[in-house]
Structure formats: structure tokens, C-alpha cells
Length: 500
Ligand SMILES: [Mn+2]
Image (cartoon, rainbow, N blue to C red; front, top):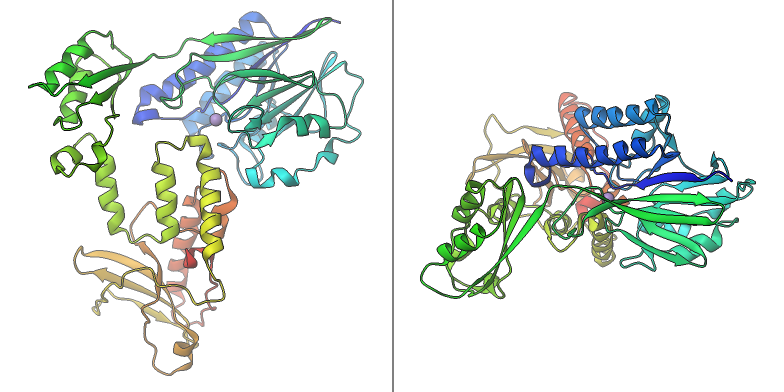
């Protein structure tokens, strides 16, 4: 048979403005572009993309056009791009890949074989962790072809690799025909092994999505020929990350020690992290250190305070620093009166120990545990401090004749922040003649806040939690109800957010 050569890449995360840097966003595009150029130079038979094309399910128009530009290059070179959907760009039904597919730029892999000579390729889009046990392998029944080799593309964390949710052996054994290789995305770390004579490999991400991705980035070249399958790794040149360890000794001038250590490194145009160890009592001005790193020509300055016990020190001058906006965020979050579910999600998203690809699973797990503790037969728990009501012309009260839904705009006197509350009155209230507001105000949303962490049952669907669409809908709903002031309003359904 003629040799078939395939470039296997994935986790390109186009549109990721890492460290809020537009240059980093460009880096992610450049890395993928390098892979595409290599594929064209090598004249391979296909490029396989194993998911997470975009960093977000809502990429910008620039991201969409950037991707289209790369895909057009491949198309002009006559190289098909075969792809599956990852967890990051996954939409409810129609996918971004469908847009490119309708333009003839991408072929979505699924349970129908895509043939390249003696090679048949199949794909399984990213499956949320909770749906893995329910996966229906019968969709692959009668889908075998006379191809000599079968390749499956997936976007999943699999065993026997670390953090695996799905045992790849189960997949190999359950597909009703022989698989010769499984080409994977999701784990950003290159890896390869053989499971029951089947190659199983991660190409790795094309750019560093976090400081934990220290190894050089890479893609795979899969060569399928008379002698079987050979998989080799190619390194992608990407922007350098420099880690500068500094052990503070308690000497008179900590900053000078740090600066002189930084001077020993070439950090020009690089992403630079100073890692602090040693004397926990050393007083430091992080913003000054960051300014110094930038003055030496670095692209991104960062400080990792790895001194043990630094968090437990009482000295506030150590805790508060300009360079640590997390502290400011914490303060602001306190003021937002988030529900316990909202706080939990916030914690997970900000936890530096939870890698981005795990956020969805972690949220699902922790919210699940929270849900198990809640007795839904009980009235909604009060977990929001009562905000004093201001009865002036700015206060709008909308009550139906039946009177069990009230939307009230209230003002927090301390902060003069306006809130819209969806206040559910208990039945006893609606049955009495006097309509009054109970203290069971729930789901308090700052009226002008662009960010919302109100948890609805939809947001527990797993993977990346993105409730922004939901928020918009809720806001519109509130406005809509406002217009029909005197029409009866339907009783508000409790949702999970009310309980969390
Ligand atoms: Mn990814």
C-alpha cells in the first residue's frame, strides 16, 4: 500500500489572551500556523485536529477568521483537515466546525469512516465525564470498511495516562472493529503508549496554556504503511517561558538580591516568572519586581511566591500588593452576596491548582456534592443578608393579583449599589391581602453587573461553566416582566440556583 502520512495536532486554543496579552493571543495563532505550514511543506495526506480549536465556545470574529485563513491554506494545498469538537469550543448543537464544514474547509469525523487509501478515520467529540458511562458504542456497528487500518480521534482524558476519566482499553474493546491507533486531544502533555496492540497518543497542545506546560510543545506525524504505524513527534518552536528561582536569605536588601538574579538571565521578549523561596518574612514590593522584569524587556512578568507559610503571616504589608489583584477580587466578591454555589464556582475557577481543562469536571463534582446536601422538600434556605429597602421613586414593585412574584429594585444604602431581586413570596404571603416582602430574597444580582455567577440547572451540565447566555436571558426576562405591570405573572419556578 502507499504510505499515508497524517499530521496529528490539537488543543490549539485559538483566541486565548493568556496573561491578558494580545501578543500571547498571536502566539497561539502562530503556533498552529507553524503546524499547518509544516503539513503543507511535508505534503502530508491529511491534518487531524483532536479538539479545542478555540479556547472559548464564543470565539471572536478575529479568531473565527484567523482559523479560516489557516484552513484555506490547507485547502489550497489539497490537504483535508479532519476534526472533532473539544470541550472548550463545544456549543449546544451546531458546532463551529459545522460552519467551516459548510464552507468545505473542514471534515467532521464521526462514526462514518473517512477514507484515506487503506486508512479509515473515525471520531468521537468530547464526551463530558458524567456521560462517559452512557456512551453508546452501537453507533459504530456496521461502520467497518475494508480499510487495512482504523484510526480513532478523541478529545478525552484517558487511562492508562494520568488523570484519566475513561479507560481507553474499554473504548478499544467496545468498538466493534479493530483500532490501530487512537489520536487524542485534551491532555496538553505529549504522551504515547500501546494498549492491546493499539497506539494511543496525545499530540500535546501547540502553545503553553499554563506554566505547568513546561516541556517543548509538539505535534505528531503518523505514518501508516506496509510495516504498520509509526508515530513520531515534532517540536513546535514557541515563545520561551523563563523561570527564575530566587531564595531569599533574610539579608538587608531583598530586592537587590532578586534584581541581580534576574540580571543573570536573558529575558527579552519572554514570559518570565520569578519563583520566590526562602525567608518568609522578607518584605517585598511585587509591583516593583514586575516593573524591573518589564524594564529588562520581558513580554510578561510574573511572580510565584512559593515560600512556605507566607499565607499565614499576619503582617498586612505582605499580603496586600498591587501585583496581586486576587486580593482585590476577593474583597469585591465579598460585596457581591453570592450564593454558596456561586462562591464555590468562583473558588474552583480561581484555584491555581485546578488546571483549566479540569474546571468543568471539578465544578460538576463539587456542585453535585452541594446538591446532595440540599433537601429540596424544604423551603429555600436564607443565605443572603437582607438589604434594606429604599422606598423612594426609584423603587419599583411589581406584584401580580395572585401576588407570588415580585421584582424589586433595591438600593444598598452603604454602597448605593442598586440590586434587582427576584423575590419569591411564600404562599402564605400570596394568600393574605397585604402583600409584603419576606426576607427570603434570593438570587440577588447587581443590576448593572456584567458578570453573574447565579447558578441555574443548565450550568451544571458540566465542562466549562459559562452562564453568560443565561444571564442575558434572565435580564431580558426581568425587563419583560416590568412592562406588563398589571398582567398576572406566572408563579416563578424554583431553580437550582435558588437553593445553592
Ligand atoms: Mn485543551
